[in-house]
Amino acid sequence: MGSHRDLPAGMVNHIFTNSGISSFTEFVGSYAPDLLPGRNETLAAPVGDRIPHATTIVAATCAGGVVMAGDRRATSGNIISQRDMEKVFRTDEYSCMGIAGAASTGIEMARLYQVELEHYEKMEGRTLSVAGKANRLATMIRGNLGMAMQGLVVVPLFAAYDPETDGGRIFGYDVGGGPYEQQQYHSIGSGSIFARGALKKLYRENASPEEVVLALIHALYDAADDDSATGGPDVTRKIWPVVVQITADGFHRLSDEEVGAHVQTVLDERMSSPDGPVAPLR
Image (cartoon, rainbow, N blue to C red):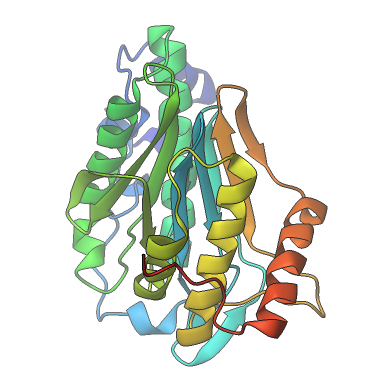
């Protein structure tokens, strides 16, 4: 069979709809492997430092679901390359993923993963379990290992609502895949160590979604306070973190007005207490 590019459009559609493969990634890998992330030609030299990188993503479970938030800054070395970057993506009605690392590769992976879940649902007539979704994403990360070794590292954070437990679940990954389920909260990216330290003090089990949103914004503020690659609230340009919450009602991305109100609460508190809330010793 010749290249997929030599086939008429009708033939390609026929192959696609009658592939019998529930995985979109495996389907593309069979007919056009060069289109998959990480399957391109080997780069002549590492380019990781020359392309924009995404930074801090945080997620935490709440009563009846999970909340994820990401800052908006992308950097190339010591340069701020973008101030309003999207790093948190809806992957289906009950799940989302945030990206840290090589921005272009991460966005491409997020879009392909969206199609992967939609393709499975259409072919099988049902949705994957939460563990199944996490494993599918792990397979895609392992497929990018070659590019990761050349500096194009993508480390996503996956979160979903699980109807079996009526709660949220969070999965982290290493560069070789994973997945590793995280309890209660987790963060990725260059500011993650500071964000995780903040969440260790602020997280409360079974807190309401609104309380967890406020805790995550505090965590991002602390990450931006100590990590130059993480962007804080841009008050003059009104660029706020991307915040999404997923419950039994489905995926909901908070509007700029909703996030802006939470950001203002954090800023007001930081005016009198620059280091933010503190946890009692006893």
